[in-house]
Structures are given as structure tokens and as C-alpha cells.
Figure 1 (cartoon, rainbow, N blue to C red):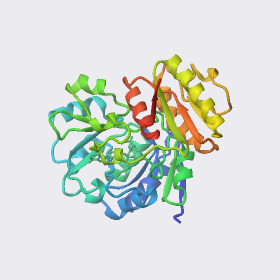
Figure 2 (cartoon, rainbow, N blue to C red):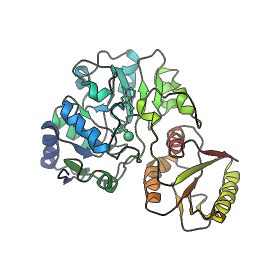
Figure 3 (cartoon, rainbow, N blue to C red):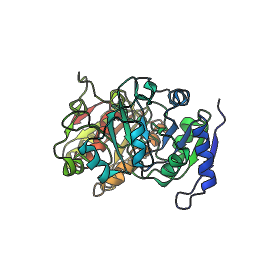
Figure 4 (cartoon, rainbow, N blue to C red):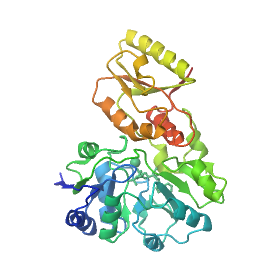
Length: 351
Ligand code: TXA
Ligand code: MG
């Protein structure tokens, strides 16, 4: 057991001394969980192999799953990447700081443990004031995966981090909700046509406006038992998975609602406890006490922001099966559906 210090910081009125205390832990080889605009991250000095090892241990993360390096200012990129292409520069100008992670060829000072043995490195500059300040004060690139136990949904609230990592990390910065709720977009720039390895807050449409054609890793179009292996090691693991089985219903809205009602009835008659992931517009159509709205169909940002919280909420119930509505894969809908599909292990019923 590690003694975990909770450091409370208000993002609207940052106490520099507290932030410095967090940065000092990072500099001396410790682990600190901190809020970003996407999800909470678990940070360590990326150039210190021992420190990075602590991240893998705390999360129970497979060692072949590489970490994202977080930097606070553009010039810090030159220590860790070999070259920045013209396309990369355009994307950085447009989207940094923010939820876009870019993959580059790495320099030799980036330890292999960070990149899972790959010769590429993922880099992101977060926009969250606490994350930015912490990284800047630490003076090192900060390796930070999402601050959850491996396999669990990424944490979007302080309490999620505490539930997963209390006693396993040196400090947790108590800094309010992570607003966007889904992890950053991961974009590979090492091939001619940039390829999205993980959809996220910055959408394909937005990236294409800046650099033209963008591919999506075909392995992500996934279906059950697909033989395609995702290019991003992290995307091959079961992930985001709640304890209950998740079944997605795909079709037009009325058919989804009917389908959910039908399957709920069938499964309940077999003795299962069934919960429903609904939306503000549909939640009143269902019966039962485990109907949770994940947000509004008219504002998919609310769905992105709530999804992981809702999946975690179901873990606190005795529900066996979660029936979930789905969303159009446009804009942020692409990232939402990617996470839902993974939570469901690609278990989809077309209606
Ligand atoms: O929003 C985010 O990206 C959050 C916050 C904390 O910044 N971080 C995050 O990290 O989601 P993590 O470790 O949970 O996810 C990183 C993803 C994994 O799927 C990993 O396999 C992939 O990025 N990745 C990292 N380095 C890579 C590389 N060199 N090549 C391909 N994929 C890489
Ligand atoms: Mg993660």
C-alpha cells in the first residue's frame, strides 16, 4: 500500500503552492493523478523508467500498451520526437492545447517502457489549467494514461479515481469533473494518410478540414470475432467494460425503444435483472427503476460527458444485463459509439 495524498485544487482559482507540491512528487519519481479536459490521467516523469513502471503497476496495465506523453508548451516536443511534419504542424496550430494526441517517431531519450517497445511516441498538450500548470512546473514530459484500473471505464470524476487508485498512487489532485468525458483522439501521422487509431474529442470531420483525407483504423469498425488487430495496442483490450453484459440496439429510434422493451421483457422472464441506458428524450418510455439517461440526443456532448459515469453507476447495482440505445456515428457520435461498442464487446442487435 502506498500512502495517497489528496491535493485539493480549484481550477478557477489555482493554489500554486499545492500545484507545486504535485509537481515535486512527479519530479522525484512519484505518481500523481490529475484532471484533464478529457478524463483524469495518472502521471509520472516519462523520462524516468522507474516512475513509469509505477504507473503500469498501479493500473495493472499490460506492458505492451504504450502511454501518451503530455507536454505544456510546444518547444518541449523537440526532446521527444524526431520530426514534426507539415501536417502535424497544422494540426498542432489548430488543436493544441486540446484533446488531440499525435503519434510521431520517438527520440532515444524516451524509454521503451513508455512506448511498449514501439519506436513511435504519442504526444498531447492538454488544455486543462491544472494539467497544464502541473506539467509546466514539473519541468518534464509527463506520461499519463487514464487514471483507472486497467479494464474499467476512464475516470471523469474525482471519486472514480479514488475508488480505483487510493493506496496505489502517491497523490490525487482533487480538481473537479473532467468536462468532455471521453479520451482524446489518437491520430497516427507516421503514414502518408493520417489514420485515427482512437476516435475522441476532435472529430474526423474537424481533422479533415485542416489536413485533407484521414483514414480510420479498419479494425475499429469492429464486429464480434473480427480478426483485424487495431494499430493502437490499447484498442485491442476489453475496456470500458461494466460488470453487467451490455447489449446495443441499433436502428431508428422508435424501433430501438420497441426492441429494448421486448428484450427487457424476455430477459426478465428468464430471471435476469435488466437496466437501460436511455436518453433525455426517451427515458420516460421505459419502465423500471434502473433506467438511466446518458444525456440528450440533441446535444451529444452531454452523452460523451456522462457515458463513463453511467457505466460506473451500473457497477454499483445488481443489474445483469444493460440494454443501451445507440447514436449516429457522426462528429462526437463516432467516439461515443466506439466506447459503447467496446463496452458491449461488439454485442449489437439490429432492429
Ligand atoms: O485523453 C486522453 O488521451 C487521456 C488523458 C489522461 O490525456 N489519456 C489516455 O491514455 O486516454 P490511455 O493510456 O488510457 O490511452 C492511450 C491510447 C492507448 O490506446 C494506447 O495504446 C495508444 O493511446 N497509444 C499510445 N502510444 C501509442 C503509439 N506509440 N502508437 C499507437 N498507439 C499508441
Ligand atoms: Mg485508458
